Amino acid sequence: MTAVDTPLTLFDDVDGVAPAETPVANRLFDVARIYAEPAAATSPRGRQVLARFPAAEVVEVPSHWQVPDLHGNAGNIDRWVRVKSETLVLGVKKSLAARPNGRSADFIAPSTANGCAMACAYCYVPRRKGYANPITVFTNIEQITGYLRRHVARQGRKAEPDQVDRDSWVYDIGENGDCSVDALVSDNVADLVATFRDLPTAKASFATKYVNRELLDLEPAGRTRVRFSVLPERDAHLLDVRTSRVAERIAAVDDFVAAGYEVHLNLSPVVLREGWEADWAELLRQLDDVLSPAAKEQAAAEVILLTHNAGLHEVNLGWHPRAEEVLWRPELQEPKRSQNGQDNVRYRAGVKRAGVARLRELIGTHAPWLTVRYAF
Image 1 (cartoon, rainbow, N blue to C red):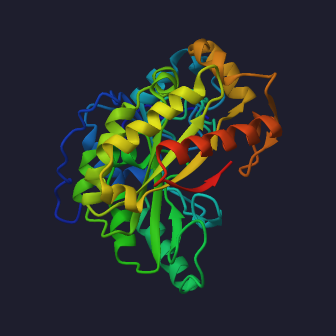
Image 2: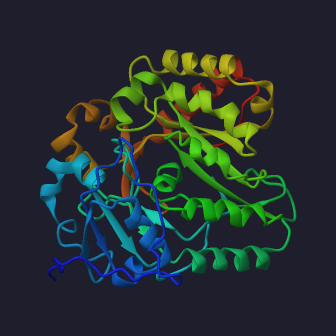
C-alpha cells in the first residue's frame, strides 16, 4: 500500500488554538518525516508530537505497522542511525493487556511507545519497521492509563514480598523502548508517572540508558522505579551508541533519588570477553565511590548477561561490524527461545553460570551494599 504524500489536516482543539509546544532540540533527533495514522495525528497527544517537530513532513499511513519505507526494507541497514533520528511514527494502541513477568516487574504494561532513537548494538527491542525501529508513539494515552488503573485495582494488595518488590505490584512501562527518550517526544511518560503516583499498591518501572533531567520535575512520590543500565566504559563506548555516558548515568542516581524516584541498577549487558572481570570491578568501585548513602540504602540490581540475535548479528555486520567481535561468540553461545518468542543466542549454561557467580563475587567485594534481585 502506498503512503499518502499530502500532509494531514490537523484539527484545532476545543478553544480553536493548537497546543503550543517548544520544538525538540536534542542530538538524538533531526526528525524529517512523521508517519501517522489519521486518528493518531488528530488526537491531542498526536498534535502535541507534531507541534514538537514542526518542520517534519507528515505522511498518512493506514497503520503504524504498514509503513512502506520501513517495513521489509533491508536497505535501511545502511541508514540504521539516520532512520532512528529522522523518523517518527504515530499510532493508536489497539490491544491493551498487562502480561505477567516476574523478573524486572510483576507485569509488563501496555506500551505507550515502541522503538528507540538510540542504537545499542545488542538491543533486544523487537526488530521491526525495517530493523531500525524508530520511535512509534501511541497517542491513546487516556485509554492506556485507564486500563492500568483498573488492572491495578483488580490485583488488590500484594500478599507477600517477592524479589520484584516488598509490597507493591510493579509494572514495567518501557519494555519496548527507553522512557527517558520517549519523554522528549511526548508527555506519555509524564502521564504514566502521574498515574502511578496515585496508586498506593503499584509502581511503574523502566530501564534507561539516557539521562533526561526533565524527569526530575515529575514528582513521582516513590511510585516510579528507574533502573539505570550501567556497564564498563570499554563496552559502552563500543556498544551503547547514542546513549548517555555511563559516568553521567551514575552521577544522576543521587538526583533521581532526591526527586522521589526509587533508583535501581541494571548491570547489563555483561559481555564475557578478555578483561571483563577487571573492568566490572572498576565499575563497581566507581559506584561505591560516587553514590550517596541514601542511594545505596534503596538500591538493588539486576544482572543480565548478554543475549544476542542472529538477525541482529547480520544487521550489525552492515553498519557496526566491530561490535560483533565481542557480541557474536559461537564458541561460547547456544540457541535460546526468549520469553517474547524470539530465537536468540545466549552464553552456554556452564559459561553463563560461571560468569554470574564471578560477578556476584565482584559485587560482594566492591559493592557489598548492592542487593542482586535476580541474575540471568
